[in-house]
Amino acid sequence: MNLLFDFAAAFASLCFILAMIFALIRLIIGPSAQDRVLAFDTMYINGMLTLLMLGIRSSSTVYFDMALLIALFGFVGTIALAKFLLRGEVIEP
Image (cartoon, rainbow, N blue to C red; front, side, top):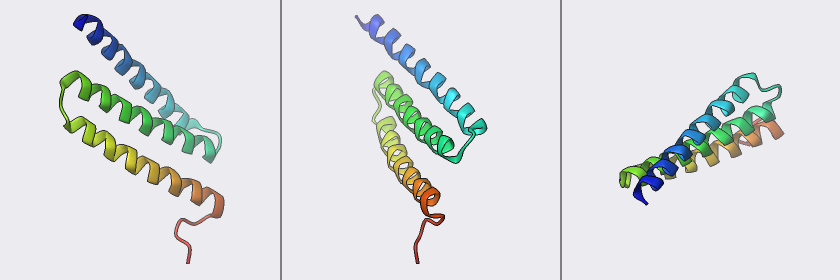
């Protein structure tokens, strides 16, 4: 059973890394700014999930703390980018 769990965790990590590569391609060649924001959102979610899988595989709590920080900063970054695209400024006077 432990071998099956290790294989499943390694496969999930590989899938998350592959998804991050595809999101990076979309971030670089995205035709519009909205596509780039969505690719950024996808990248930070996949990065967070990759760190969570590393934390599960290594039984270390440091990865979970880093994943929490990535989720927090990614959410704030996505909100700031969306507000900038809608209004043209992030901080209103």
